[in-house]
Amino acid sequence: MFDFEKDYVLENDRVRLAPLVHDDIRRLNIIAQEDNLWTYFLGSSNGKDNFEAYVKDALSYREHKKAYAFSIFDKQTDNYVGSTRFFDFEISLNTVRLGYSWIGRKSRGTGINRNSKFLMFEFAFEHIGFERIGLGAHAENTVSIQAMKSLGCKQEGSIRNLFPSIHSQGRSDAVLLGMLKEEWLLFAKDELKNRL
Image (cartoon, rainbow, N blue to C red; front, side, top):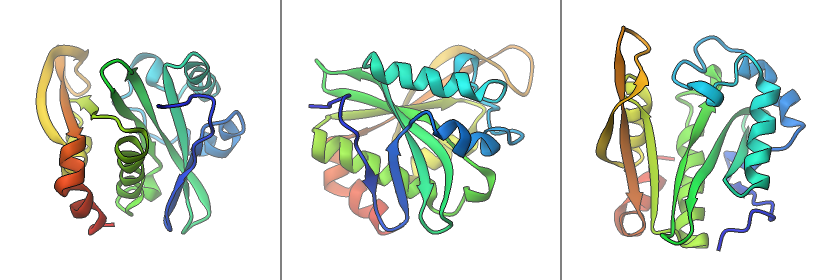
């Protein structure tokens, strides 16, 4: 059973995910101001203009048992580089979603995301026992969608016209992806581990 009161720390030789705390406003603020970081984060999920409010909202969601956010620390460079979280806990269905993930420009393509997601999948499936992890992205965010597929996530469908289009007029879909516990245990874990 997931315990919102517990400070879960997930780590391997490359990254450490620790519960997001108020001090992370200072630690992550410079990265949070990078151009294009928040392009596909709409509404209250966009932290560029008021990063302090973004972190305070994340902490409030944990307090109200709605989400559990982590800071991402790169052990190789000795720097805080981003954030990610579990959210939409459906305890009765034994499912959760993973998202609100962002990483600074210099850390993209370095294995930080892959290592972070590996730790989160392993924790959620093997330590907590969730049966399913859902993920999603703005349909125009092709880089994020491809990254999720490269982790072993399966595309499951879309929600039509959920978002305003970012790069044109009109509306855009949300692309839905997921990972099942049996997929993780049977093949996805080993495949991803070999790519770390």
